[in-house]
Length: 144
Image (cartoon, rainbow, N blue to C red; front, side):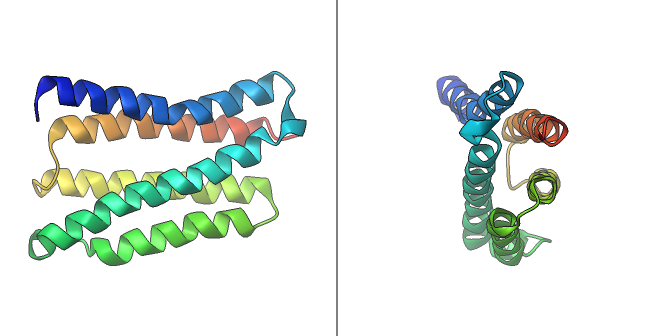
């Protein structure tokens, strides 16, 4: 991938993390009545599904070279993200999504080791995932 494409990818990934950051800022600013926490959870489910879709695509193009059945893991993780939206206890919702993001990152680490993704992409995923997980943990802590 060319340098300018990598810069675009990094910029867009950071932009994609802004709703999580905004939710934390909103909670800190006393805007809980605007449902900032739930908005971050719905966005989190979308992002988890998006990342699971990347794994689905890798499975379809390189199924024989993968030690992990990405078709199954991507579906299970996406369904867990959806399930998190159905629960009524916010802490549980956040913990499920945090688990999903960690699981996706661990799978990405294996994909890096298998040569399925490039190092720069894994590093980007790692940085943004840690930022998002940090935001979700803060939102757990900031629950009213």
